[in-house]
Length: 87
Image 1 (cartoon, rainbow, N blue to C red):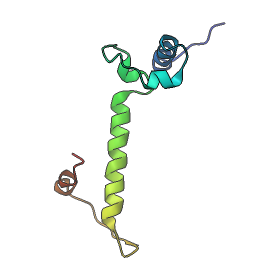
Image 2 (cartoon, rainbow, N blue to C red; image 1 turned 45 degrees about the vertical axis):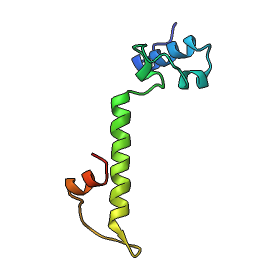
Image 3 (cartoon, rainbow, N blue to C red; image 1 turned 180 degrees about the vertical axis):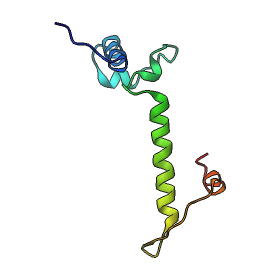
């Protein structure tokens, strides 16, 4: 019985096949015109970008809320986040 792959895992398998099963070559792929290119690392690019943005926002909030070793309770406004370069 054959193994059923999710679409993302199937794309990753195809990219590995294209690069002779070399993970580093998949990472360094230069065929940006390939329709599978954004998915080659086994992640949906939009979700990965959203997670990265959320991590950046959380890191900024942590940095802004720490003063003298004490955590302040406040929320940064969208203006503060925009000035910090997140948006």
